[in-house]
Image (cartoon, rainbow, N blue to C red; front, side, top):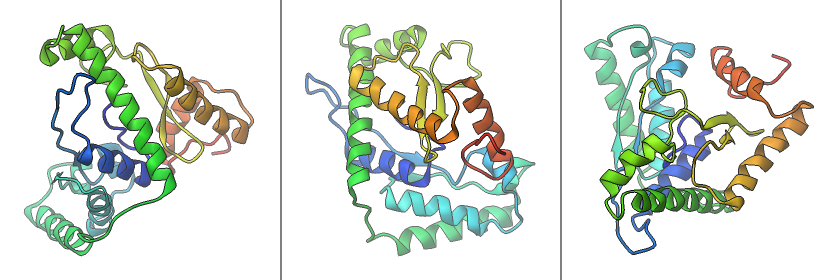
Length: 233
């Protein structure tokens, strides 16, 4: 949970700006240096939004990368959703990405919501990383391995058999990815209450209870060209 992928565009920017500036993540002062990476979109969304004109997708992903001050950008094309992209498609994506990143080089994203989200991400990251140091008795590599086994480091819907798969995400009322089922993530009451409140807000808006059905609806929403799986769709 160092990054919340596939959320709203602004949420991805929140994650990027935070991790791009965030090196000191341990109470003891030890440092981990992270490289924030973003592509244009995951395969599922590429398939749903497939178009022979790749520039629109590349431009949106590049805009997020530029505003997030990403240090590395992986450029993809919609062609990858159905096969191997051509050299021309790859070249078009690279040209578009370079132009957008250069144009937005001097732009920055600053607002109150950004600071709130950055604070939440910073808090979550510290809790997970510190727990890994604890599990590894100071050895972060060993701690991460033990953390994966214990579900402290957990990835939803991952095909890896070593992954616990107990943490379950869903979108909140604004489309940001929140955690519906915490699983074994070492989050404190503040973080748990934050995610619960965000999901409760969506439940009130949709006049239904927070449930696994929201996760299913969100998965199918992408194929319908939407971000949040509302009951009426």
